[in-house]
Length: 516
Image (cartoon, rainbow, N blue to C red; front, side, top):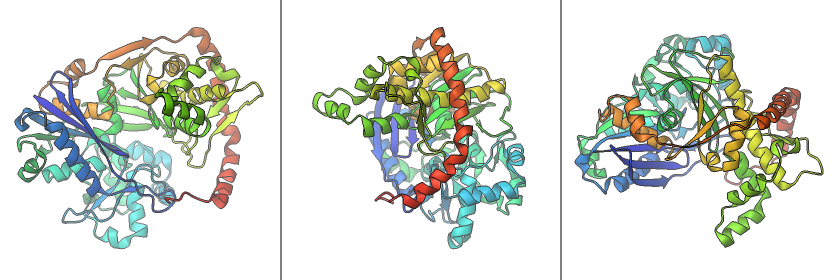
């Protein structure tokens, strides 16, 4: 028997067909466009997601008989808003997680609800510009005609579940990222909806990540090559699925993800949230579990930015020899002393989420001297990103959530030198994963549990998740990094009042991007 895990991402959709033994049988990826009609806006067309999803399902399902695929489940980009009318038709393009148009709406919600601390008590999280709730208020304020048509708001992957089954539902881990779902009590907050004068009925029914949303409709089954008996399991938010796919389903296990953005995530069996709202507090896809999560916006992106702008020679070598530019950068970084000879990088290239919640903060290199080479700057980027991830780790430790083991994933986790940097700065052993297929792999595990191929997430993870190597922290390195980390932590408060002035000057003087 087989399951399909699908990750509906920002750049495209990825599908995996996986056997009940945890073997990947086939995979497919399909891109779709991202639209930026104005600066700070980020939109996609749900209809284009749907066409891409149908294509990847057809590809991965072609190698087995339809009746052998028992279930399909989804991971999805969080916080997006798909607006549907009473006929289930899309009203306007979906507004995505990385859209920042809702600055005023976020401030209004916070003021209306009596401040951030009240919101944290009501729903577990303060709203951020990228969360779903401010987008709904933005629609009401700026597109009243579209708002008048609004019947349901779905999250991105939940729209695909609706197209497959005809049922409008969400599940706990994705609903948790809307800023109007009461994470602790696992329900939509009628209290907050009333304060904001929103009709609670616009939000869908919420079920568990592993519950059965329905079966593939007969019409859809014929079109995409699945059986009408294939179960549709809603799955989870991309970070929850990433945790499941790496076996992060118990207290003490931490996920450190260094993709485009960076994530530190840890499950908890009791509701524990940061009273200051510096880290997110969401429902896990695993039953009766929550997780705390810190997010930095420019993790692997910081290194790709550095490569694209300052390592053009390495890029030319890659074109000629086929040797990855990142491989060349890693080899040079290994020659640089730890701490980059006191060069510190602040990785706030696109603002920052955890712990600063500051859209106007920007990056910096501090401590530049004539001794510093390009390799020093590359190492400082890796170290600065890891210091920023440690900010989340330290907040969790202050809440009594202590790391026993950190499992690392994402592009940055493939670098041996960066693996050691993470172990040394986190001061805990880190482990790699043999199969690093991202959230789609976690969605497949959820499908396997939801379809009863396994009796529990523990049983499924034991079969599917295979650990790679262990990297131990080097004590003398950690001592040096502790000193540098304390300096790193002091830099944002010292520079904060300058960032807004710089941001405003940048807005006035920027030419903008052609695609905007």
